[in-house]
Image (cartoon, rainbow, N blue to C red; front, side, top):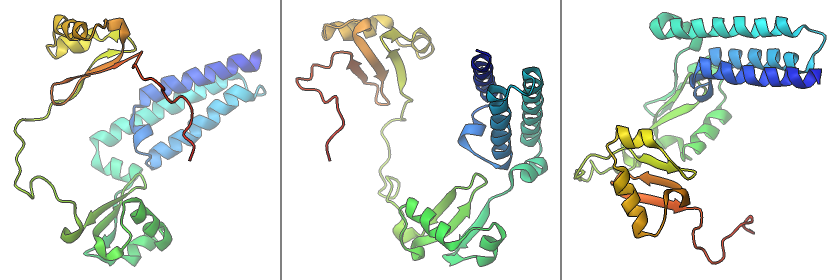
Length: 235
């Protein structure tokens, strides 16, 4: 029971810490985020499974480390010099279609890793690349040469008829999202009338969203499929 309660405390504290530090830790794993994640994980693991160390010491350690990491994150946002020192800076690996061997050696990035990262960007020939940049989070950003770039509507001189709206979630898990209705001026009566046309109620809807085109997209708990697939597909 002692280990059980310590584990629950560690789990809850990690959730709280993740909320405090924000989504940056989850989305972009920079040097600072990498160190923070490993250290917090090690402290939390000791809190959960190492009864030889007082739980109060570990909780204090988590609190101090979280505060320190939060302060560093705030300072790095306000100061570009501090941010550059903590998170590093992007490194150009390909410029003008030419490999920069010196930069690759500087960041200890092998040619095999570069080719693999390019394949993940659907680039199988180096001569297609104009620029390749290794970002702070270890991901590779690629700018293809003009001849190999995807054609856009602007290239075809096609202008959109109207600006695209952000989709608005109206119902989720059978529950009406009143806040979204009020913030985006969506009438509840309109939504209920749309459902009445389909002989449905709000409680029958698993998910409802007003799409970017302004149309109402609905998914019901009972989809009416004659033979729904409820197992993994055989391949």
